[in-house]
Length: 52
Image (cartoon, rainbow, N blue to C red; front, side, top):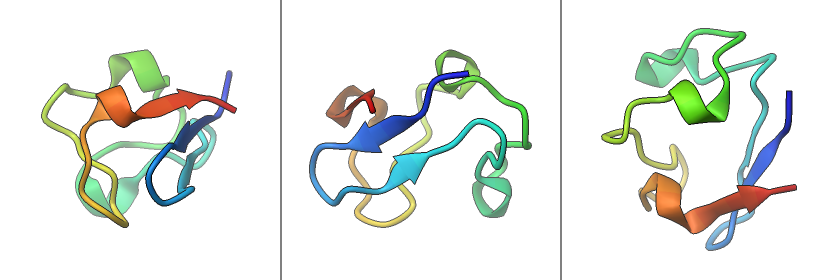
């Protein structure tokens, strides 16, 4: 699965790791994350991410 990077702060979403602290289980593809999810570091929405 592809990794996605935040254009604002550089946070990398890795599907293998997920974001368990914010309700995204490991193994969750970026496309399957709810639209309400935001970057855990800077708070921007999914539209601010691009494929690494």
